[in-house]
Length: 138
Ligand SMILES: [Zn+2]
Ligand SMILES: [Zn+2]
Ligand SMILES: [Zn+2]
Image 1 (cartoon, rainbow, N blue to C red):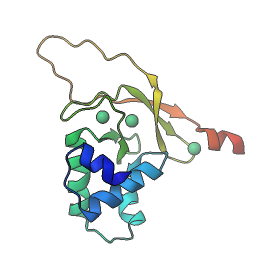
Image 2 (image 1 turned 180 degrees about the vertical axis):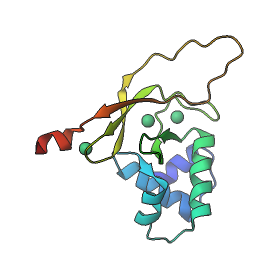
Image 3 (image 1 turned 30 degrees about the horizontal axis):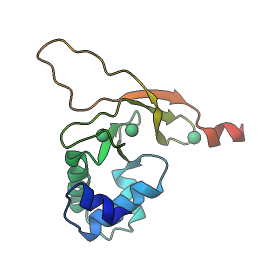
Image 4 (image 1 turned 135 degrees about the vertical axis):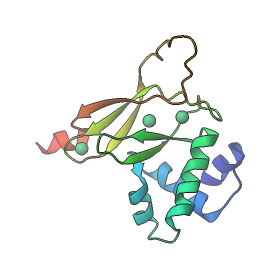
């Protein structure tokens, strides 16, 4: 799956790219840089991971989310995203209890019409509250 995706997005296959992509595919929530590093047990250095995420974002494979926690998080994009042209106009849900961020891909917000001369590179809509698993506990 990860290998296929790299090919589809014309990204050269490297171990780091494969592993980061696999993590993004496995997790339902968006991943912060530090979380990726930890899950990969420091097998790759910060810079390599940073470059990998940057390449994914450039190609339209993943998008970054400016999380309310202050950490930048990453999640996979839907098919609509293209190189240098993200269309992630879905809600990002921040759970105030577990701190995770989820892409609500099916909850779309219409892309705003901007005044002339402005060009969108990425859009972030966020909502705060309790996620499904945290609500079950209370
Ligand atoms: Zn995107
Ligand atoms: Zn939660
Ligand atoms: Zn998202």
